[in-house]
Length: 352
Image 1 (cartoon, rainbow, N blue to C red):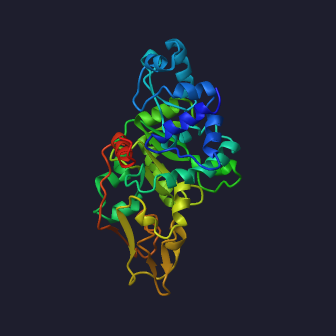
Image 2: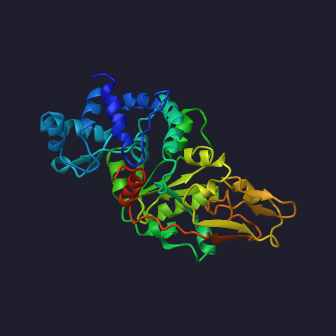
Image 3: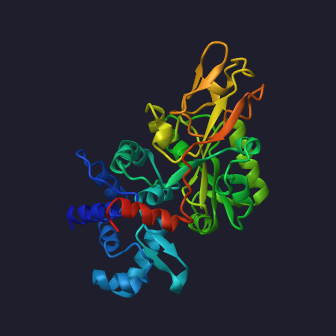
């Protein structure tokens, strides 16, 4: 079994919503070879986007059902595919690279994997150019919600967290990756939240993290706001995770920060506006802004609407309450759940 199996697997993963494009350097092939043994890759070719029993996969790949069940269980435990159910009731499906396989390597990633993904992730972003629906969205921090009655229910992150029955916290994979590359920042590692089956799957596989209650989850959100971290959730009304991102480590924020118009390239329904009469140009908001959207105009600060992503981290520490939080003219309502989000992406990529 040569490189052909990895070429086929790359093509199959590229048919998933998040994509897995080819590159001239072949870095994506190095990632696949690091994660998938040849027999892993061959068996993955028998999977589809829909959960199926091992027997169905075995039939496609011409192996015994018991052998397929053992191999699929092993692959799921290593975060290479997705499993629903347990034991004899387990079903398996193909998983996309982001959000999916990449995040599932949290407990096993090493510096080589970090270097490879650091090189490759920008190509995934470029491969999604022209796709209107994104997998993630930024949601306002608590202080922004408190000062703006216009914030929609699906953007009120504390209310969404209070509804959850199963909650967990895990390490931030972006900060962990940068740490393994020798560029670890000062922000907390264990601070990203996950919910429902997503939390169960992560924790039942023994990956770094733990269950928490609603009270601790809300306290972690408060801590994120205090530190000026940006809340990034799934682009759905029913969310499975919310990350606390910094622009020094988060791949998405780092890419957006160097662009001239980040607010025009993603789902952001709100923006901050400085009330000039109340502002004394102390500059605290500029220090906290992850997108360098705050400009010193001399006697007061102002905010560039093309750069403001509506995260709201500037509001809570303004000593003069000089920042207002407003809806943008065009409001995007996220899909009801992740399945619909991914289906929309497939249609926009011409794959469904």
